[in-house]
Length: 463
Ligand code: ZN
Ligand code: ZN
Ligand code: ZN
Image (cartoon, rainbow, N blue to C red):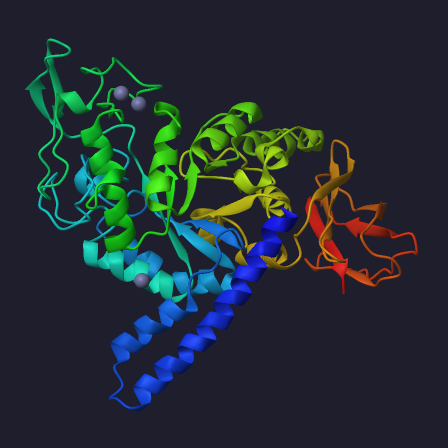
């Protein structure tokens, strides 16, 4: 993690340097021409560049059953500037293309990968979230503010095909796909079972299960110039990928996709087993959501046993491949002490994601913004757990050259205080959350006494 952060810093510095160079040449051109506002603003987004992904915090920019009616892309569009200002570096969108349930679908029943709300099929022109123009306008705006935009890619299964006689099953199956975009027609051979084999690592419900071994499917999904992956990257403007239900197919699919088009990639491998998650990230060469961390936090914060935080998690095994989260659109079980869970993921290693509803509706936004700031500015280096019992947890981020922090989480109903060993000798420190007003000076041996309010957390670093 140490080298991880340091290299991002260098990339950022290089970005700033190269932006300044390009800024000069743009001004030179503009000074001899009529100003063209459109190209000037577009140029500025190119020269500013996107934030290095993982340098900040991801925003999951939706929840299950966001308002229907085609307004969601516009809603997101009004928020991207504030999110960027708060330290968000990427937004994860729900699946953007037309699905079987048309204007009501959250997108996980994909029908036409190339209908972004512009063809009249499945009961509507627009998707639940809006029109193609509203989507690309929002993505361009997010780019203006340096945000990466992550596409939710559902390629395990499809939905909404017509019935056809299936030579492999001997019966009729819903595998005849005739999308109005005219791209990626599918039929029985493209799904399991077929002439290649009977199944892959998993199917989802009764949905037709795509066969990624078929060259035709590979061509349309990631290989060809007009594939889903390249169209989403080059025409729509996506910068990264969140792969849905990766238990349903083999990890080489994600690896091939990523090798073909690049971009940050994270898989939804819904499993609490650290070894399995670690295996998947290795073979897929992609990140995974840290479901191990999620379930340990549930034990810790809902089960009122912070000792669970001592157990293994993906971020402890492989921090650079772990996307940590407290809630997502599928699961919201850490309903008590949720801000404590956020104080955990936003001070620890891994790339943390914040859930839209937690940020915009359920939790205190200033508290979350403060933790995002702490994540982006103080939470560096490896992690050492300093103390843990059933209701207290103290850990140190070891930082680089004197940076880092000490986080103290308290799940009891009383103020707690504790002597801890920091990174700093003879240094005035303070609680960056403002929960404690203490400003102690560390001893020569780096020890100091810190405190934390009931059901709360404090984060200590040099003043
Ligand atoms: Zn753009
Ligand atoms: Zn197959
Ligand atoms: Zn499958």
